[in-house]
Amino acid sequence: MAKKTPEQKAAEERRYIAACGAANAQELEPFLTDPNQAIRATAAMNPDADAAILDRFADDRFWGVRIEVIRNANVSEATLRRLLEPRLPRRGVVHHAAREKLEERGIVFGADGMPLDAAP
Image 1 (cartoon, one colour):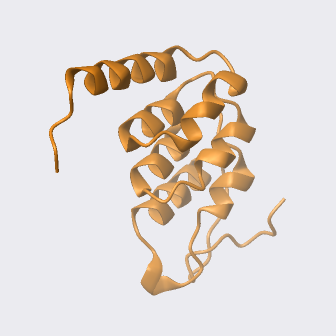
Image 2 (tube, rainbow, N blue to C red; image 1 turned 90 degrees about the vertical axis):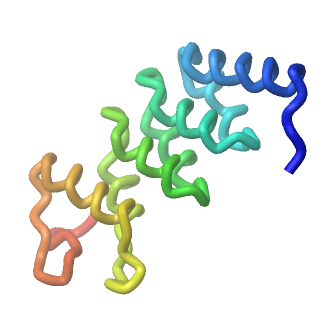
């Protein structure tokens, strides 16, 4: 892999700062497709991210971004439930983090590792 040029590094730094400073979903939307996973994760950490944009970040293929979605205080219960994996062999850190957050919110889980009550 080729080293990044100083211009590429500066562009990434500007995008990182923009992701940190975004004040609403409209400003966060460009980061949904940012080529840098760390910048997408930073955008998902933004305290100004609303439930709708976090739900879109939850579709990221990298588990690190999905974990930051789960950690965000504004994540909806529906998004957390969507991140649960019904098949036991496929459960990983994302499933377990989503379950922990749901349990903190009072959702009860059954022996199968899925919520006992119906999804909202």
